[in-house]
Amino acid sequence: MRIAVTSQNFRTITGHAGKTRRFLVLECDGQQPAVEIERLDLPTQMSLHDYHGDDHPLFTKALDAIITQSAGRGFTERLSRQGIAVHTTSATDPTSAAQDLAAGRPLPAAAPHEHDHAPAQVTLG
Image (cartoon, rainbow, N blue to C red; front, side, top):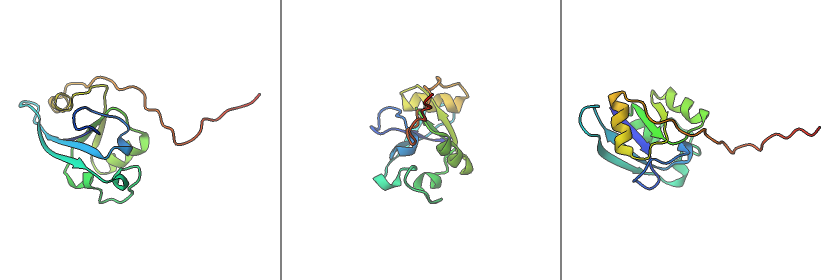
């Protein structure tokens, strides 16, 4: 299984997947420890939030899944169209989370995703 993990610091799982530019790419079979095979450090304009082409570098990695601490519906739907499952979690260790996912073990639940694209609506009574 090939899994990308959002990791702005290349050490821990980080959130807001759509704006992330740094990913660890791991291979794991669920039996052996996950192995890091690549690091992506993309330019600012290549975050999925900003880049809208179907030729994004993540789409060329034959990924099965992405692990992140938070992702919006648009991100999840876009990755799904590429055949990539998005898994959100409160876990922080990329290798352990990838190993758990590949082994079919549940990941710890993530906090709700807060999306700040539109102002909250206020009704005055």
